[in-house]
Image (cartoon, rainbow, N blue to C red; front, side, top):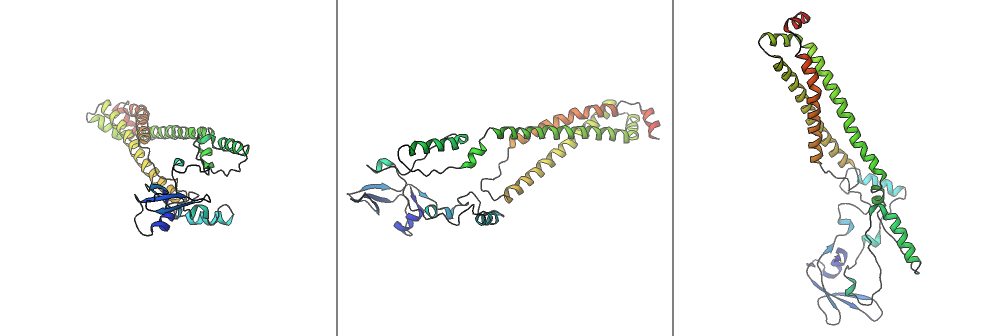
Length: 287
């Protein structure tokens, strides 16, 4: 693996992928890299090219370059001293990434350690103590945001998602039941006329039941559409490149089914009440 900056130095505008280079260790300990195979060095084949940070869709701090407020956030962080203007050792990198077995007798410069995201800080401290005890001066780099996102305390906040869903769904079903009760009271004359025309109590019951289910279905579809629009706007306005859209279709389907089942149950009582009175009594009350 070779960085794109080094590709320009070695190959210019020529194709570098799958090309052969020679790694040669000199007497003074330095290492040279030349294009082509040479008998006195270690022949290597370029299998990949690492993209430079300037060519990436986000900067080194995860701020997307194409987001609306990306430049504003970047300038604010620089103004408060929280983001350097440049990071030369990364932005101007011209390194070669290969297996240590290809460089016999070389010393260790970098270590990549994988660990549980929740244990990033503890692992960093342990590695630092280990290397310092052996006379080394390590420089550790880790993404502290992952350790925050992986903390168990966040699980309690995620539970609020389910709590808010059940609370809002319950309030919506109560409103739906009251709406159907009010509709049955205001449409007594219509119910009486239908009964006089031969409609059975079951017909009236099914009419109000289907009205409740259709209202809930319309509200569910409208809520999903509005929620998707708001989520899209939220993602576009966020400067963080990690904030992207991922639609949980299975969760949306489960929520819609639960709401429709709940609306059906909530509509049974008002529909049964609306269909229970005698036609003569309904006409007398409607006049």
